[in-house]
Length: 92
Image 1 (cartoon, rainbow, N blue to C red):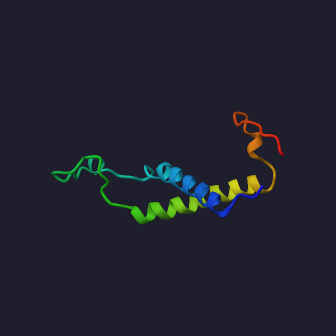
Image 2 (cartoon, rainbow, N blue to C red):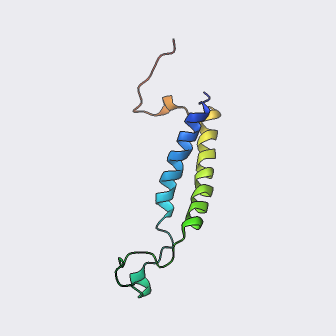
Image 3 (cartoon, rainbow, N blue to C red):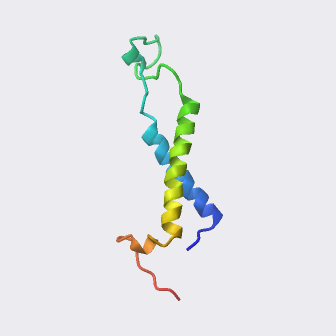
């Protein structure tokens, strides 16, 4: 079963977003941890913003997971009918 391009893009977006929140806390050093809390800021704020690094790592990890999902769904190793809580539909 081949999904349309828009469906693949939506699946990639969901995987990317979930991966972002999984990768976000790794390696983060807060101002409180560093002992350098700037007055007027939250102590849990990061010492250094790592935005592009996080985006790059997230994209790499999400692409790997996405390619695995594409392989699973297109090579007939696993279909949506194998998910136990999805309803079973008869083909017409």
